[in-house]
Length: 165
Image 1 (cartoon, rainbow, N blue to C red):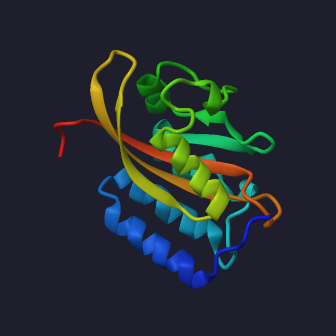
Image 2: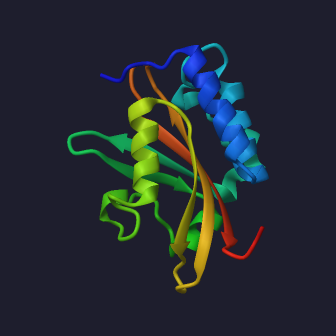
Image 3: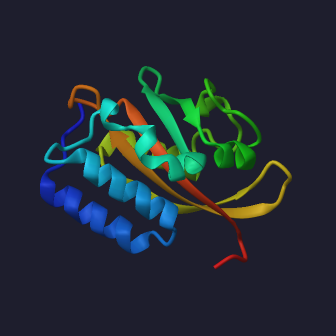
């Protein structure tokens, strides 16, 4: 069972993420997560309302967390995510996708989000579907149905060329 982080650990992790994030998209996703969390450790799955973050939807992916074996399944992907990741990912398992499965930085981000119950922010270098090298700022945000474990991870992506500032 997941050890629930205390408020101090959540505050510290959020502060670190806020310092690390440069993109308005990832920062806005983190602010939304904080607003839906309220006084709870994690927001509930039903707290995520796409109509409240319409401007972020092209850059979001909603994944379910599978256990035994651990994997992540795309439930919703935005148009920008699909464009950069080579097509519609809905219904696909991350563990079956080259360059996303373990031990990739993306897989590590998803796994850390699900295992710690804390937001995870990082910069990931990758090659897009055309083979162009890019950089992607991501933040994985944990959601829970019953407050006992993480069963959804919502990821916000900001894609850019490596030479973009």
